[in-house]
Amino acid sequence: MAMNQCCVLGCDRVAVIVSRGWCKTHYMRWYRGAPLEGVVKSRVTEFVDGCRPCTVCSEIKPASAFGRNKKGLSGKQASCRDCQNAIARCRAKSSIVKDQRRKHSRNYSSKRRAMLRNVVCENIDFDKLFESQEGRCAYCACILTRGSVWSPTRATVDHVLPLSRGGDHIWSNVVYACGPCNSQKGGNTPTEWSLRWQ
Image (cartoon, rainbow, N blue to C red; front, top):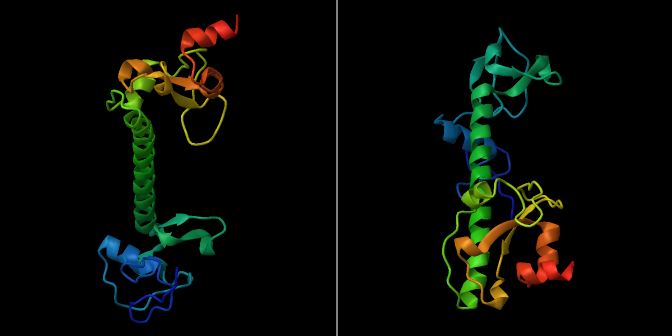
């Protein structure tokens, strides 16, 4: 990706928001409704008469508008609380979008495998499924964890009658299982799997 200069006059920063050609500072100013014109302060300055400009929005604000930071200049953060809150809202939105994408991809991959095998396929709410099992593995009843980090107790989706054996992708055929139980069961039915261990 080519790094271009911010298109706002008087700004010599690298443009991060490529579609608009703005640096992060000018994007945050636009996001908060502040005007884009004016010289952007790129460095933190000392408080003069109890006020200083914010490094993000460049508005001159009193010291009370800045959060505490032991390592910061004068013991304060470089950006004001309003800008910090706007950045936090942007990050929260992006994490929500990531969770929605993760849920969609998990549901889509299971449905796609089912459709390729020409079996009955329905939308499954995996959050409700997790709650209905009270967060426990369907086979060994261990407490499951949810997330993207691998652990032996991480919840994995299992088809009781496997798709490879003609099982459907429906609510009654899908359960949550821990990783070890799901991989040991493999393409077997629960009765075949339990007979292997007797």
